Each structure stands twice: as structure tokens, then as C-alpha cells.
Length: 186
Image (tube, rainbow, N blue to C red; front, side, top):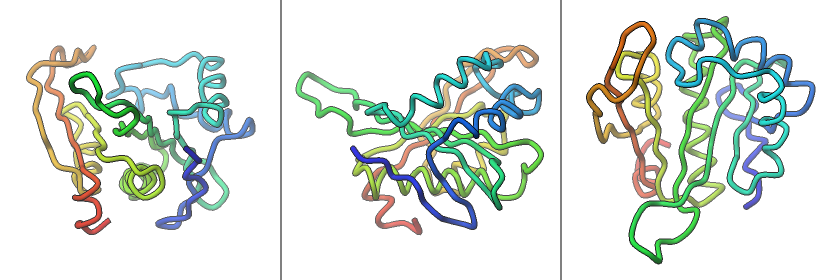
């Protein structure tokens, strides 16, 4: 598959990461505001560097950095995965998305724009049939982003995720099919 990046949308540039971006990504990835609702509450800086710089060579990882006015303000994750099913299920039909927004620019629509760009890349460029995402149910900002991007809530998994301050909390799962994307406001 070819990369869906770069993409200009909603006043943002979505593109592959380069070495010069790693410091900006590290500047907000391990902050308390970001980690409050992350399963991985800390990422070793060298691991983060290695993971991001490996993306262009990966056949399944189409993650991107999000730039506004020349500044990296978010990161988007798009992984191509195999759909579940019986033997013979086609390979690489589904996607899994996520995003992290620099807390200094939170609440400015960057998360919503990133989710829409990831869906556009998944369906329009990569030709996927289904995309999923998940969030802590107690994270209303992420829930708003996913719903605002047109994703449909499919499940609530009761007390499915451990949170170091809140204990066992619910996880909500969202999905969107390619047909829904084409028929929707996408």
C-alpha cells in the first residue's frame, strides 16, 4: 500500500514523521494531561523515536504527524489489521485509529480533524472496509471526537480497562464501514 500522506485538511498538514519531529512529539507524549487517559502512560523517548522513524518502512502502520502553521500539534495512528473471522478471511481489510493532541492546543478541533483525516486515509486512500477506535468511557473529549467524526458506538465494555486513579472503568468501542463513510458527511 502506498502512503496516504501528505494530506491537507481543515487547515492542517498530515504527513509522515521525520527525525526533526521526534523532539516535538516527545515534548507532549509523556505529559500528565496526555497520559491521563492513555493505556501506555509512559513511552521511553528512544522507543518513541524508533517507533516513529520506522513508520515509513512499515506495510501496516500509516501513522502521521499533524502540523499547523509549521508546528507539530498532534499525532495520528492508523494501523491496518486483519479482520476477524474463519480461515480464508482477507488480509489487511480493517483499520484501527487513534490520536494524541498536544495539550497546549486541546479544544481547538485538532483531534476531530485528525480523526476525520485518518478515516479519509483509511477509506479513500487505503481502501479499507472497516475502521475501529476505542476510548475510556470517562474521557468525554475522545468520545466527542469519535462521534463527531461520524463513527458509530458499537459497544461498551464494562469495567474493561484499569485506570490508576479511577480503578476499573468502562471502555467504549466505535466503528465505521466504508459504505457508511461514502454515504455520510465524510
